Image 1: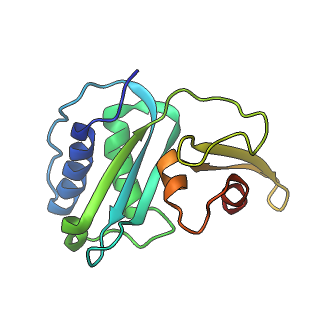
Image 2: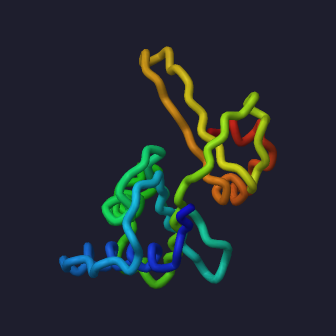
Length: 157
């Protein structure tokens, strides 16, 4: 099983820095592979608790090197929930990478544990006649302060 490594986080920072400097991204120091992945940016403000600044990824397996490069930029610059991260924010940023493995089908929407499991929900949106999905990574679900139980997290998601 592949696991997230600090070299993957370094590569995400290298990618964002190269973007701001209009430079080439240095080669990664990890092996390639095919896995679902997410890149999460958080910002520390005034020494407080890090706050989510962007999180985007793919539930479908993708090339790790291209995936981390693309999602490092997408989550930093194109997460619609937040304004794009600016270069001046780099010193206060934290990055985490998630490589998703071991999917399990739940028996019902309460069949998961906050902080241990992530959750993916899929549903029909009758207003737009389309299928939609929502995802919480395990660490994001655990970090959501105002939501503490599976029912409230699912409702928010």
